[in-house]
Image 1 (cartoon, rainbow, N blue to C red):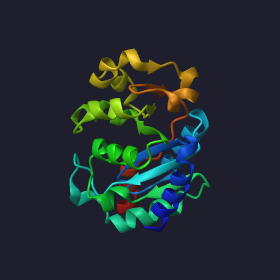
Image 2: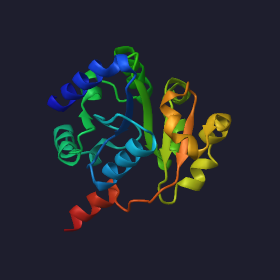
Image 3: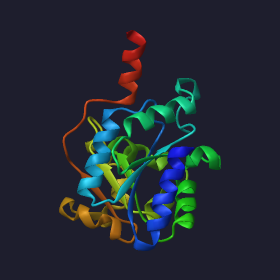
Image 4: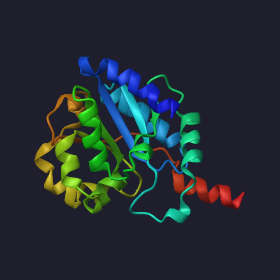
Length: 207
């Protein structure tokens, strides 16, 4: 829980200043270079002050059998998140929630002055209509969506992108996303990192 407390101290103290905080949620099963890459891109292109990795106890849409123990995933995430503005959070583990909509509500209540931005890949934009309270997510915080191989076209033609097409910002305005009143989102095209958690797990099994 040390890393989460570190995040709380930094963000609680700076919340009165309207600090821009990116939130990258996921199973981190395991964390890898791709997570670092998207985090550094988000810090740079969105003008964020810091970014939290929100390690989920489990993914409600996936089988638990394929999920490593939370303590292992959390420890691995801390090993990767060595940038001074990256923080690993176990908020969902201690709150007992695995639903993003509930977590964002809780975070906004705790840090009402912080400017949160939800970070996700194009694959999640495809499936977000299956998430509980997905419209609430779009209406709670600005969202930044990053390219993912083989998913981007489907994501931009999907239900969520179509429903919220009026609130999509041009890429050139990504730097002001954190200041926008939701719904507001941007799709960022950039260098695609080949690493993925699933391929890493397969490789580790084959080794």
